[in-house]
Length: 579
Image 1: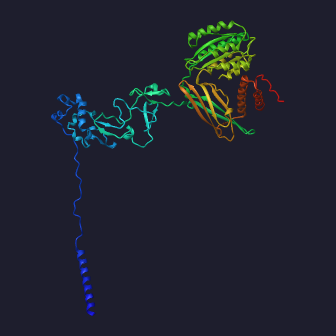
Image 2 (image 1 turned 180 degrees about the horizontal axis):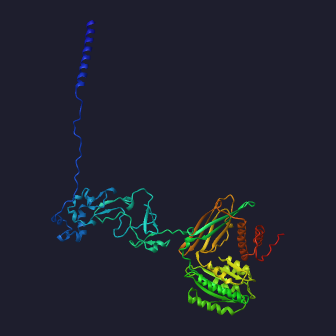
Image 3 (image 1 turned 135 degrees about the vertical axis):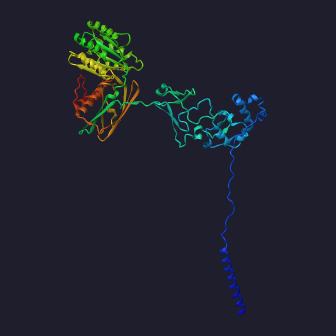
């Protein structure tokens, strides 16, 4: 038993010593090192074009003579011959970044090109081509269209160039986006340019809005220009708003003054045609007729350069000085002077309606030239079958298809001011009635001069606010260089602003004004502002009475008169009391 234990102890000690020896020997050995050589990829050999001998080329079936070897004289036949044998080998797909405008270098870097055994220097530049899925003819410029998938093209004026505005973030050199397909390299056509086409437009195409613009490169309609927005009128107008708040009725009144400023000095006034219609009937005294004629003759010098005029004398019927309008010149002025002097001694009854009607209903605008009528009369018709004032105004306004502006002038006593005022008010004009006859020709000359230069005609307006129905006048006159246009309206006292838009036409084209009226920052007006607004509305309502007599309209007129203390210088009928 004892010997057995000794034996086990001895074997265990021996085993321990053996392991200690192995551990000591293992620590003294050197560390393992990887002696395998690193992998070095073989260098790619650059591909170059090999030369081809004449004998090898003559073996091709499509080339039979040495004369066909001249690439300058017959490059297409050589291209077709080589294409039949190597087109499958040399076609390879490349990425857009691999394409270089250096044709020889680009093709020389691709596999399979060494099968072409022709000297590189002998190949013409148009021998190689980039073929795309959507091929573009090389002899015709690519058509640019508005709203194309890759972006939109707009015309920037006055510069005659095309500006590309793309919604994507791709570069302008990205061939997939520029040409619409994956590029491939082949020997088919000449390389097209990747840059957008430069199209030059003629002057008329860029200035005329809403027309097809034709490219001189393609000869076809390639772009359709958007209709240009009307030019703004704020550049040459000084806009001044005034406000007044009625604390009792809790309502606000405003006035917007539009006055032409110095920025309009370079604007050419609109060419127009003018009738000077003078009453020479028995009711017109010789002194008054002299003032009419003298003021008319002096007014010719205030007209614009290209304006045309025609003097007219009327009693029962009208007689024109010229068969047609004539431009202002020494000869035409002398002819008009002789004509007016001859009719000074005539007299007779007066028929205002039949004397004016032919010039309103039968006159047609030429080239959109505005037409003005300056009517010098007392407005007193003396014929038996005369038309009453409301019917006369209604009929003349109805026949005014050419939108003629009518201006009335008179002086002295016994003047039909109702006819003069409302005939002008309803036809884009106004009137001037003086108490004194003496030297009234100077007032007539200034009256015509202030209305001689039309900068914007055919005005229309639209108001966005609390009470758009309270904007007056409803039919705006023209914008003149020497006159202030005033627009009246009302607003809610809790409203901070309102928006008004005007649209008209100048000698250069359409014009518009979009103005925000800030009621808090406007100049403070007085109660006269509210009274002037009421007078404008009364004028509008009386104008409605001439079309359709109405007891409700008449009652509203008298309510406004009593509330705002407005004087009405006309003999209006009294409203009937309701039972």
